[in-house]
Length: 440
Image (cartoon, rainbow, N blue to C red; front, side):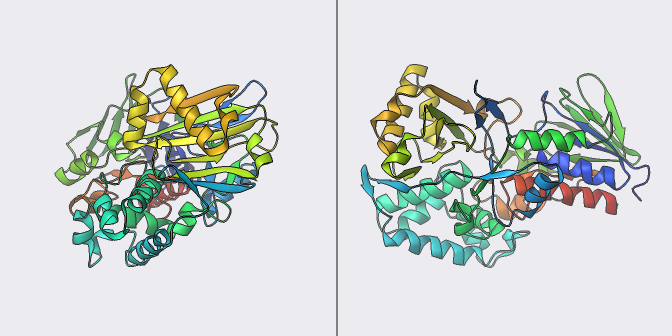
């Protein structure tokens, strides 16, 4: 059925590229239209003068993310282990603790127990789905954790660190879906043995570029944002600022929030359009502090930290094994990220360096460079890590997340049922959408 089939793919992040490669290898004629002047979507790597790799967007892969490891090997790349030498730091209500109180593990265990009851392909069908969907995560944590500090810490760790949102902005059901799609809190929160275990040598954009190079000549068009998608009984047409592409089917491989900004003719069904309005992108600010060396290691510290309060929720050692420089990376989410965005640059720098110093000591206040990247200000992303359904939306709008609309199929990591929100989820979603197209 694929012989001669024409498919237009909207987006050339990992999901769009995975879909296009699967379709092309099955014999379909593929055109990939990308709004940016580069491939990769929510990945971006910047190199310092000495070649040090700074991954400004998605950067990690870990165990059970089999498609990503396979792609790395297929395209001749390697991985290296995330630096995690030494002790981690826990800042708890302004004080250092060796480990979180026991109730943190108790609540995480309860969440894993609840998540195991879900079908990640249809979380709205769980017996408790109605209750969990109308339950705000922050309120549930405050009623379950036992004290305010534990509730705040878990809200930052889970809503912030996993979803790049606030605990009062997301439902318990959405978090449970996210946990279930990855196999639980352990795989999601872990470094070695978890989702943050490995990085790609050269950065994820290098893998995206090699995937794009494997497409047939002329299949990819950059700097061509799709403004309108029309469809009829005869096929689909994607209009860009400079022309049109006619095809038999389309795969839209961009986040729902961006897919909703495309005009559709005829208009999308009400529930699909409603879903795009109820799945905003996360809000994360990622900042790299660069030092002559990773000085914290001499003090027995790993650079890994989490905090129950403050502008930075977590930090990691993002140094690379081929560079002598030390890179300490911090993440700020939701309202904390908004506070930082509103600051004058000099004040923001001061606050960020003070936050790093609270983790690894006063030397952190004297970096050789400080590199920020704000995905919420990126026109073709408008936020990171991914989109999250608002409270109450899963049961009504969730069934429209992957449902084909005529000849239009949906990809993107938000539509994945395995490792949703990650590069692995993006690849799996793209390949699933390709399989749908090929099945007719």
